[in-house]
Every structure is written in C-alpha cells, then in structure tokens.
Image (cartoon, rainbow, N blue to C red; front, side):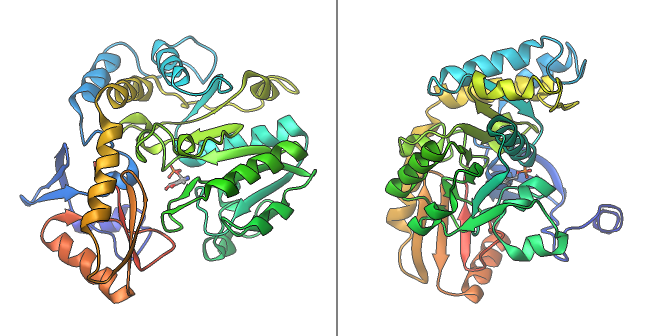
Length: 369
Ligand code: PLP
C-alpha cells in the first residue's frame, strides 16, 4: 500500500513516517505488518485518553445511529453541541460564556482573529516569534517563522511580531491593536512556557489599550499540562480561548470561547458574518462530550503531572540539556541535531514513537497518553 499512498495522497515532505496502521488502542498503534508501537506523540497532542477510548467510541456509535449532519452551524438545536458546550463552560471561569464550534485548530484561530477585529473595530495584530497558529492564511499571518510564511506572502497586513517572554514586545501593543495572539506554552516553537509575570503584563497592556487577548491553547488544552487549560497555571485569563486537537478524543473539532458581549459582533452588520457548514459536527460533539467527561472524572490531570515529575527526575544527562514543559506537554532539549535524530530513530526501531517540532531539530517532543 505504501506505493499507492505515495502516489495518490498529496505529500507534505519527502520523508513521511509511513507506518501502515491496522488499529490503535490505548497507548498502542498496531501496524498491518504485525508491529506494535507505543505512542508518545498522541497524534500530536490529540489522544489524551489513549486511542479509541471505549467511552468515546460508545458515544460515537450512539450519535451515529441518531443523526449525522443536519444543518449548518448555529441554526438547529443539536443536543451533542449543547451538552458539550454546557459541560465545558461549567469548568471555565465565568467570563467565558459561549463557544463557537469549528472543525480544527486553524479555524478556531481564524474565527478568533476575525471576532477580535469585528468587536474592536481595529485591524492591528500582535503575535510572537516562533509561534505556530496553523496553516490557513489568517493563522499563518500570525505564525512567527518566516520560513513557513515567505512562500505565501503577502499575508495579512498590520501584524507585528515580538520576542516571546520579552518586555520589549509590550511596545508593539498599541491603541490600534485589535488582538494579541499567543500560546501560553509555545508548542512547535520548542515547548517554551510563557513566564508568569510577562503574561500578566501582556494582559494588563491589552486591557489598557482595548486589545483582545487570544490564547491559542490548541496544543496545551484539555488536560495536557495537568490542568484543563494551561492559562490556569498562570492566573491570567484571555478574552478569547482557542482549542482543538485533544478536544474531540480523536475526532475533528475545534472551538473558541469568549463572552456573550464579544460574540455579539458575529450576530450583526451583517447577520451570519461568520458561518461554517460542518463546525460542531454532532458526531464530533458527542465524542467531545464523552472525552471531556472522562478527562474531568478519570484522574487524567494528575496523571499528566506525574508524567512531568517522572520525566524531569529520570531524564537527566546523557546528552539531554534540558527537560521543559508542563504535565504531558514536554520537550527534551538535546545536545545536537545528530543525537536527536539518532534517539528518535533508535526509539522508532524498538517501537516507541517520539515527536518532533516544526521549528527545532534538537528537540524531542513528548506528548504521551
Ligand atoms: N495552534 C497550535 C498551537 C498548534 O499546535 C496547531 C497544530 O499543531 C494549530 C494551531 C493548528 O491546528 P490544526 O492543525 O488543527 O489546524
């Protein structure tokens, strides 16, 4: 099948991992040639409960037998959407009052950027170097790596990039700024947590100039850092919170959460100014509800914290310069590119899937389940 895969499926690199999946369960991925891999990447921070968790698959079967897509987003009342939204919002601070449901991470960021522009009536955006917010045009416009942006220029105008964790970046946030978008822990940029005081000062500057603060928690959300969302480690709340990846327990879904007042901007001038056909698909929402319920009730946050402390204790020396990150969102900074490649390859050969990040070739990403 590899030949037809390479021939017919558009490729994004010359070197796909290329294992042929038979089935996946818990921490394991099984291949058609009878191998078993322990998954330490979780489909890049997706399968927080493990693959094919029975509570998620049961919810999927239940919804599939009732109905699939029935109407574009926001028109019909669909129980899986309403149930999921209620459960999620009950576990977020009170200024998060509503969720807009989409299909993916990049769509969540696109929606958040549009919402901020519409609500504030401004156009300026501030983002950070080494950030990653997705590959559609709006999200790419606020992604902080020229190597990925340059082939697609011109992108959105009025975007300024600051250094992550640098006070100098505060100067970019002005009365013309509609939104500041950042990952509280930069994922693809190398698993770099924001500093607490810095994040607080970004919050204060946004409030001072009337810019909305958007947290992209697409990678850090849904328990990966040991809390439901990473912002809870910081006691700093954004105006808009973006999520996807682990949200659907393996099904495609994303969303952005904000206040009812801010979301009013999508209702008028004109009505229906931000719509999606499949956003909040009922089958994905049924999975998201089961996934979230299990995450909240099943002790997963503590497990993520345990993963962090074991990893930080045990993985020392032997070419490891630093272990960074929170919970089960961890990065091993290694001494050299060659060593990084050798470790990833050796682990792969013995059946352990490790991750990489887009922006660093000396970092191994761990996102175990
Ligand atoms: N934002 C962050 C922080 C991400 O890590 C990613 C994906 O890796 C995205 C956005 C884009 O999400 P998606 O691939 O679902 O569009």
